[in-house]
Image: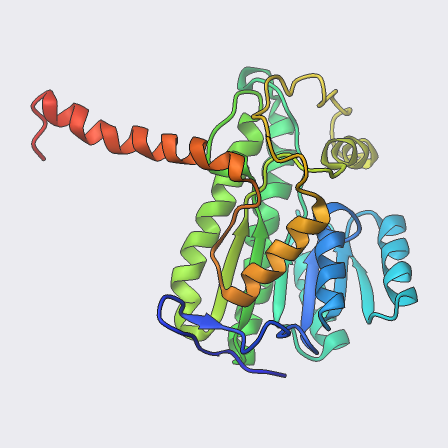
Amino acid sequence: MMPLTPAPAGREYALESMDGFEGRGAVITGGASGIGLATATEFARRGARLVLADVDKQALEQAVTNLKADGFEAHGVACDVRHLEQMVHLADEAFRLLGQVDIVFSNAGIVVAGPLVDMTHEDWRWVIDIDLWGSIHAVEAFVPKLLEQGKGGHVAFTASFAGLVPNAGLGAYGVAKYGVVGLAETLAREVKDKGIGVSVLCPMVIETKLVSNSERIRGADDGLASTPDVTSAFGPLPPTQDETVSVDAVARLTADAILANRLYVLPHGAARTSVQRRFERIDRTFDDQAAEGWTH
């Protein structure tokens, strides 16, 4: 295993080379489909050994079978990220199966769309429990073990463009994803001196089945309300303008960001203007307040 070493100026830590996934242990939640599976496959192609976690046991089994058929080391652990005890079990199993965990990718997520006023309490709980608490549970379950292991590593999260810029119709989802971005930013500051890197992926709309999978998973959860029509409430989503950005390309960018210890992973150039405008509005507020006599 290659250790994390001091990097050139501008980066706290980096893996020694671009083939730094070789022999490393990687855990991916939401790993049976979409970004999770694509990134797991990219990690494996670069030499990583995998533990995939997902709530969909059938899809998880199929994903692991396919990876093994391609000659990769892969294991599956059924896990509902809403429950800390299941995440702790995942961490225990991952260290047992791999011997060492170097990369944790907290990726599992769902979406419920619609105006905030139309969100039921159950909608809020379901989105926050998976999209935010799932990542919090990943920190709780894995980071102490990474610190105890003492060999550095990397923690990555899937947030969203909706975690950087608010969008009407995706309010509950945005609240959760803003939380994931804040979690990643804070964790990066707190563990940088321990050789643990942090990245947060913030894509716009890409070619995954997030919406349909969200509907299916929720419909299968007997403890929750009936599945809403999440597709009808999306409204005017931000245009991606980057229709060529595939899930495989996002996976490659994410892997590269981990090697570079890049905090933000931003696949869509179309997001840049919106992000700039948001912070310009924040910055302009200081001038507006000063013009009205606020001097503090």
